[in-house]
Length: 145
Image (cartoon, rainbow, N blue to C red):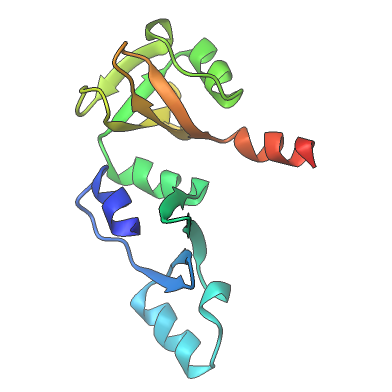
């Protein structure tokens, strides 16, 4: 599942391990060391995402890795950055540039003008970018508790 998600952004391979429905980034050397000391896989790598009800949900760490290895990006202005981080969709007035495919239905990494990853979204028929996950999501979830 993670391979399919990553392939929408880049052809680069990602070293990871799977523990139940969760994925963690780990290189071959780290895996060998962990096995030699009988360390649980989830304790050795960066959390990349998980599968829930048959669907893959990426972590912000995975989106950061992808933003350094992909050209499927949309760059937004300051107003777009604020709106996106508040969970809103991006309108045409927010978008500064789009790299890669521009067809509706394609996923895009959302970057600010300094090429820092804010999350990701999906291109809609009307040219908007629908928010799928943003860095403000964590704060909104914590506030609900």
